[in-house]
Length: 256
Image (cartoon, rainbow, N blue to C red; front, side, top):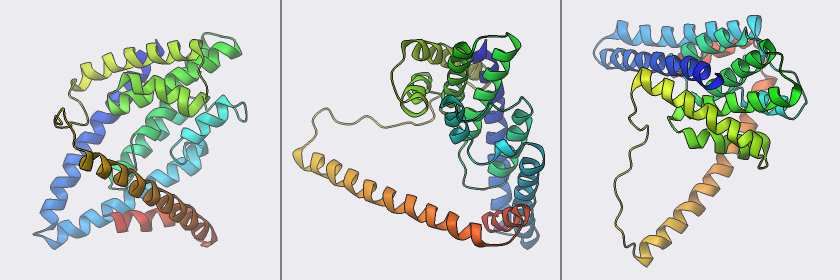
């Protein structure tokens, strides 16, 4: 049941995002040849970010950020699950922010909406704390599975990222919810893979293997640098005494 509900919510979310991406790309192509279209794209990015930020701050503060840290905190017993009112705010706010051109992923909103839907189902069915916890983790995994069209990844995400250890109960729940979510999602948008990788040769030379090693080292170093830059940027942003909505509007304009 959780997988079907989450698959429907996150599958429709993906469909709208793909439509908005095509619309935004068409506007960007038009902006190459027309100044009004260029200005409209900037205003649209600014306005969509402003509205998304206003919705989150006024209607559902727990919808801020990616949503995954909140799900982790709930599973760790540090906070309470969000109410069902978070889902429409995260859904519409995510469409506005991502569709408006901000560099955000669809997995965060999908995970939090999935976890919130699962928690709501658990409360409606009056399940015990242990069942609600497993259901919430399964809903989060189903959301990630739908975001990337990858059912096994949803279960692995729950064990590795959310729970942090192997639990047969949680693993089976997450895999079951992920599979049913994928069935609904693929019925809505087809079963094509998100990432298509060309076939590699069966025999890989030693020099190529060394390049793989060097690539991993380089990407690891760049990732550390990127993460530290993000943290520094966040600390600097906290010192700027500007309203959240105004800051979002400025960032949205730059994105546009």
